[in-house]
Image (spheres, rainbow, N blue to C red):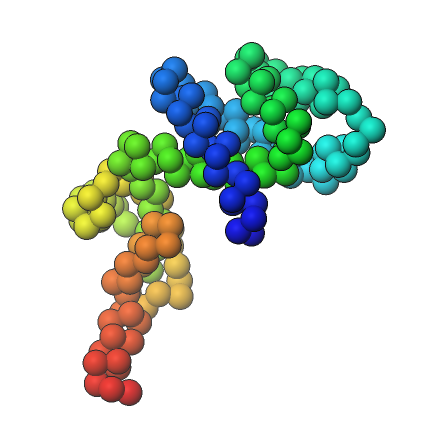
Length: 178
């Protein structure tokens, strides 16, 4: 939803700036992921929509659920989200925060699909190729796709690099005007 993304963006940016200032990228990443998982539970969604529950009790609930990683800054962050009734956008905040971190670190997560298993040497060659092509450090996850006749398909967010036989044949067909 575009509306959720619009609501989540300033919170993700604020958390990112705080993490950058305090050098706590990983800690915030874990907290946001944990809070996002909690918020997706239908029972929790009902709980946060109940306006009869005081904000302090909701903060305490999240504090107990995220024990160990719930410091004062996280507590304040959750309190602000509760105050502005924005807890539902936590998954979007988490996703945007991860994207901001990846951009700052110049990294990208890539799913590489091939028709056959790749050995470590082949994976490393693909990683080097993709790093050069994307101008980023690549964190690659390899998967087998039995639907591929040969070649590979690499997906990094909205970017798709199709080096499959099917992709080649489709390009050839388009070039021939069919």
